Image 1 (spheres, rainbow, N blue to C red):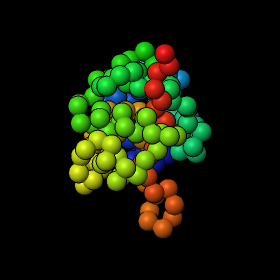
Image 2 (cartoon, rainbow, N blue to C red):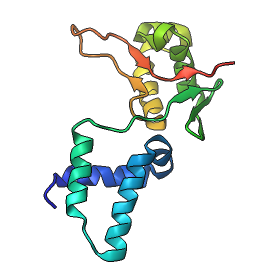
Image 3 (cartoon, rainbow, N blue to C red):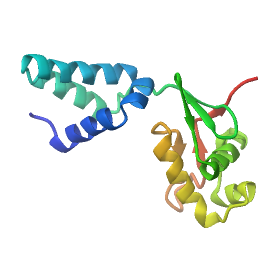
Length: 159
């Protein structure tokens, strides 16, 4: 195929590893990848031109917008139709972050709000990132370049 094979492999891993959550978050992309795979299996057609177009679209940044994630309660996040249950400690960090102004806080602020050591916050954020849609949690920028805190696109449920 005339595309970056490593990138193709990453898309395939995403499709198969995160099948249920991927279909909820990126239904159009998930459907398109599924159609191309089905075409390959049933007709033996590699659909090379379609794969190239799809992979270029993804690489260019014209990515589909993820379904909004909503913080339901102490340990639950709703993503599309799916409810994700988080472990206690990462959920406590997310709860603090969600309830900060603009959904943003620095590492020391999160440590104060959660009563965890500041050194544990990055590890707990990593656990959150593994369970939540890509882009839900934003890490701080490099020192001296601004963006000195964590932020989230997840907002509390209304009501």
